[in-house]
Image (tube, rainbow, N blue to C red; front, side, top):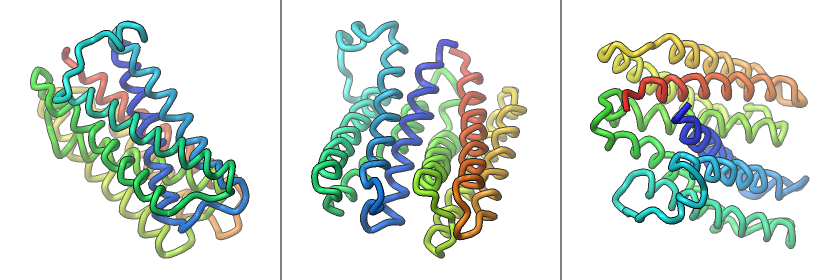
Length: 250
């Protein structure tokens, strides 16, 4: 369970970034009903993930007394999480006060989201003592795609929005394909180093099932199918991510 804090940070923080990115890419402005909803959920998720990450070093107090190495992958992802969190907080405040926020601000938040998702995978490619982790293509792609898919389907659930437009279908297709490729490459790495691949495969199957539910949802579907799609994707990405941490030899 030593890697549980990191698991929560990358799962929740990555999903927060993916959710915010999805809304920015698919909606020119926040929804007219509850425009603050997506920023609020994204901020809550990244905050919980960041707090969880501090326990990786033993406790919160110790996390703030450690020497800061800006070249370290974990430092970079935490700093990016902080930048993303601040931008989303500003967005949330503006939405609460003015019902909307400038699109330029949301684009900045989306860029920070992409960098955060990429940094979460990159941080592990520098851990040379664990050959299962130090695989740039497999690790970065699987982390990024998992956050992309889970975030998109959480956005769909929050807005009760079916993946009915061409843009949404293209976004969902790209996220699903990237995840399949990423986890397939990661599975080959697991096999090379005799790591247990069963949970990784189960995660891939659940993620594909979630994608199928999202595609099957009609235009006016309510929350049932989006909820099922998100739940399956969350379980799938979670299982695949836990399989990654379970392959640790540290």
